[in-house]
Image 1 (cartoon, rainbow, N blue to C red):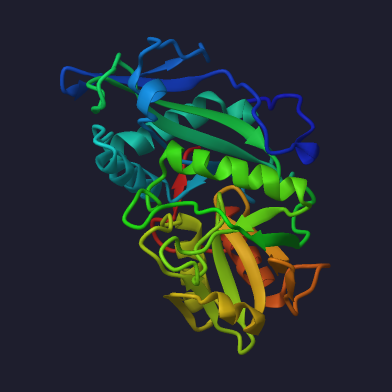
Image 2 (cartoon, rainbow, N blue to C red; image 1 turned 90 degrees about the horizontal axis):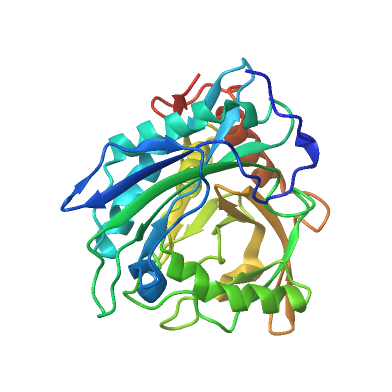
Length: 341
């Protein structure tokens, strides 16, 4: 299929409407068989559950063109599993992960002309989401839902690509103890909007959120998990019940251990430890890994030894290995790559 006439190498991380999206409706206790649609407009009642009580969950994954010309996605079964967990937490019906993977496949195939070519630095971002669609005025779960998937070609999540970021320790909390921080619910991201706007106004790229109970331990940013490298070369990721279980983070930890022979662990990370770290990165589907060069804690600057010019050496190896797996340059573990074409 002939590709669209898009300046792939200069894409930002924004929305470009593509031709087809997947839609399935839940009513009377069951999902319908689903369909592809050319209509990008969502029509719902003014009293829909999603509008009144924010009953919505979502996912994010990417499709890539590999070195040998295939179109693939990366571990979509785990996105399906995470959406199932998110739905259960918000009292929404589960859209089965097998149907999820099939729907992702159908959407990517239908929009193949928008999948960026290999080597362009761009990818096709895929956004599955589900919401309460029927009128709900009392505080209760909806009884009808819509599951949709759209996709859009995107460039790097952070402007400037791999340039190290400056972040601040935020005074705001992203999630509550025993709340919904560990699921991908729209309400969690709404909580972070004011904080990220104020961070940008003050010249920072992102926020570092601390644990909401003691505000002494590192958790995550508004849209990515943290990954640290200690001065003795150990990879460390923060552990908390209110952190989103990132598929990218889990994959990077596996890569660190099995591909690079590094010691890696998931554990609580105290704010006081940051001065002893050699490297820091933000990891997630959108960014893969974006390096952090400086962390500012209420005027106290913590400058990572990796500096403000490039990724640190361990972070770079992790990034190169994972993207090599995704793009087909490096042999992937069994089950990681879902071939679409």
